[in-house]
Image 1 (cartoon, rainbow, N blue to C red):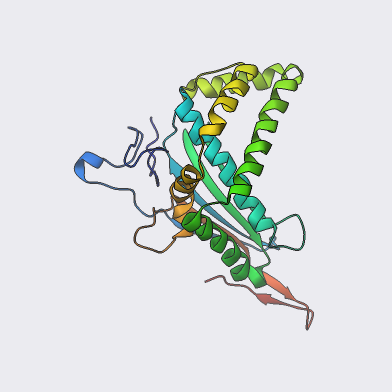
Image 2: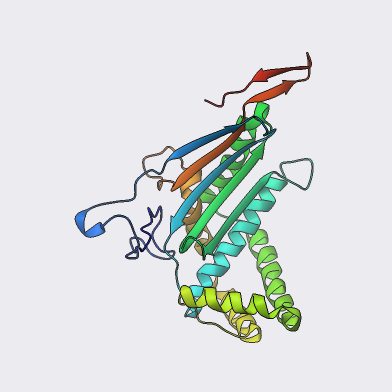
Length: 254
């Protein structure tokens, strides 16, 4: 049977476009609802992990306008990841941010994963939410825009150069996935030309709008205007080690 999604967000670049796979009917004034919050506790875990998910209908890549939205998403993820990493003393901030078309889920999924010490999870989560809210409120700077645009174009160019070394299995998986989502399949050189043509038309304002669309569910979490999350999953240990007295103490996140 067809899976019906509790989409948090409409299709990117639209205000109210949902596919027939939505678990609600806009014609009947139905809207997305707040997804479940699940807490999993296990005595073998040492760290704490918070996962936030938001689903949206896939926007098929058929035109240059569709690629503009993809470019804005890639720039946004790069800028946000760098901002969060810069707040840590190491280059490995325990945060992963992703937005991609999920073949398994049959929709686009935005995910934010925060790994933290159970004794300091509030500060780790606050750091991420602060940066997400800042980028939703104010967007990105011109220097960030230029830097990550250049980096993205270099990645696309690198893909062209390495095309002959990609295994046939990967090519087949890419074609199958693209067919499912109704994307237009292009040769890497054609894709590179399309990205180069689109890049100058992507603006900071578009990235700002994309930020509110893609990350508003977390940046404005708890506010009436915030899109609902599809799901929040928390994995925690059942106990933590206290170094001051070398003992184990029960841990509860609630």
